[in-house]
Length: 618
Ligand code: AGP
Image (cartoon, rainbow, N blue to C red; front, side, top):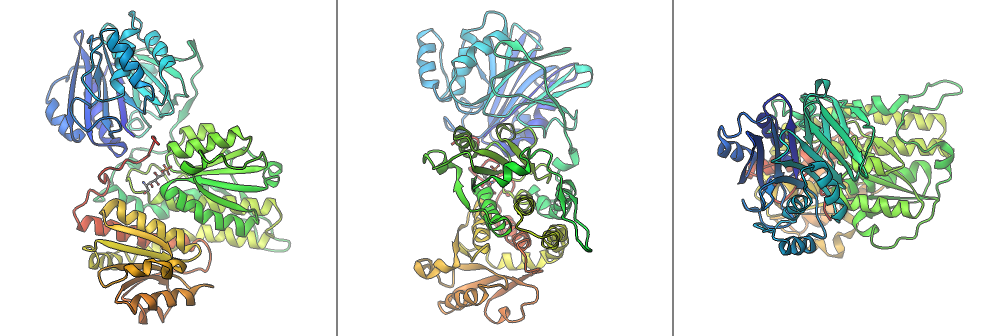
């Protein structure tokens, strides 16, 4: 995934583009570049490295430009080199273009364009788009871009400049997001891959739909589809700059871990309209799910639910499955979107496909939803990003309202997904007559109470850090859990590996004797979810099996468990309310351990190597 930024208006373009690119670096940071337009010229500066390196290389160049486009790259086609960095200039020097996405027919386009006399200097698919626009350019950039996207197969978000049309930026998208911030009186425009760089300048944003083209110039705003003008749908951004600043924390990941109590309170305030009233007869809680768009009749008719996601979102779906099966008694299966979309799954219109995604741009999750829609299924997405592609392609959405998540490692979005899924599970349980009012109210109280439990656990942050530092030099780690503890084990292992580069595996603790126990020795820390419950005795047996082989065990344990300390090396207590919202509380130590081990190892916690915030390519 890459980040695109553009500015045109009476202001200076370079400061906005550079600061915007820095805010988008979580989308990719292999190389960066900017194209400025002034004095009848387009000048391009590109570097391998971060936006800060670009700023250094740029110096004062382009300082007087009022129009510019920029790009920060996560390499798909071609290594991170200057030649492969964006913006790309067409070989006739007339068109500059930046791109996020994958052009699947670029090889054929490149051959055709080379035969037409265009030269290529890079290994990228993007350069084919720049030359294609140039080959179709007859003095009208909008027309050339419209003609070009009709020839392109694949996904794109473009920002394009033409030497002969100073001040004009043309944008277009298909499958990769592109947002336009509308400046005062539409005299200036802020273009970006998402609203994060825009919100400090304006809250009024238009998210382009697939195959829409936008023309931006001072006093000119044209949104087009299939060659015809269309009315823009202006949305007002509901969060602000503070949400995308680090706010005194060393890293976004740490900030977002500590934001979780507030994020969960905001989520509850948005989604829970009324917690219900005790008394005889007690009332049911009510939810505020304006974007769900599936009424009680539709939801009562659901025969089964398929949940799809990737990475952390998939782990949240695995917890969500337990929630929904317990409260609504609907059969739920969880699938990787990447497998579901190609497996020709057995579906019918009575199946609800529930996607979980922070960004709403994950290619495989989108692919799964499209397969579901083709089969006539109802689709719902649990999402964080307003205006994302998944929001537009699902029948209904349930927003998490946790605010922008900048750290590549997902933290508050994961716990937000769990809380939002629980709201949906209770809603389904009520609709399908599976929960009486008092049971429904009790479960809603768990959601309202969980921010306090998270705060209590964050109060142990120093103790968790001390435990983490004991194991920072490990080369491998094993995370074990049973029941809902198993997806948490997967999530804890994913957090550790993606930010600290320590190889970590999550396993169902019941599986340990079927193989992983062979890994156990004194060098392999074992983190185990060991809350009291139906499987507690079995978990204690797992712990003893590990200890008998010299393993070192860190237990995430119930606050009132006085015996676990006799069996393990380290205990991290969490307040145990004996409900499924424990899944949120247990996640906090897992996040903090990964964070502190990564920092101690000198890793770039917010921008881990090889990763990007959202995987918009397969
Ligand atoms: C989680 O820490 C990772 N960043 C990654 O697994 C992520 O959860 C996954 O790519 C799904 O992203 P999404 O929630 O935006 O769809």
